[in-house]
Image 1 (cartoon, rainbow over the protein chains, first blue to last red):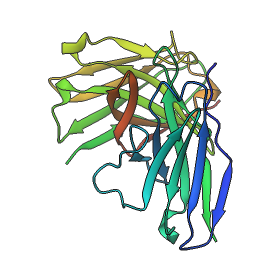
Image 2: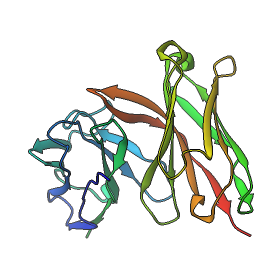
Image 3: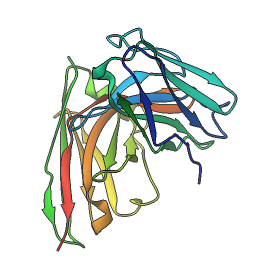
Length: 107
Length: 123
């Protein structure tokens, strides 16, 4: 079955740039989406269509795509950005797939 | 403001049944595709299934682990989404989220989420 691969964890200091990657063979043909989930809360969409930002999401969140890898970049990381981040896409039949999640730690 | 409020979670024995509800407001529910996504304790997100709007056929689609056991339905007159779960297994233990669904270039995604309801399957 189709999989999206994320690193289990990423750590950065406040003010630095965090980059979280997500790899999958179908990503050149399907859009990727990113969700932020803080402890005890529901996920929140932070990036859609690879690089678009929903209204209300800070400009420090951005997304990019290159081949079979998409990247969520958080510039000038703040303590409040500490959370789990999930990428999501679909396989060739349109079945939804989530990545395993990346825990972002702000040191 | 979009609001999705799930209810109906609880403790159920293996082999039992449970029906979850999701009350929607703040948008035109009848035009929306809807989905359920679950998260086992300490684990990642897992898509459960989706229902299209009636104008788009009202059809459903399910993830392999729940196909044949779970049924998604909707009552547009009540702005409510349902998830009927039968033949429950311990591995179905999770927080179940109700979400709205959008589709871009055949890729579905989830723009609004409820707060979730916990289902525990245990003897």
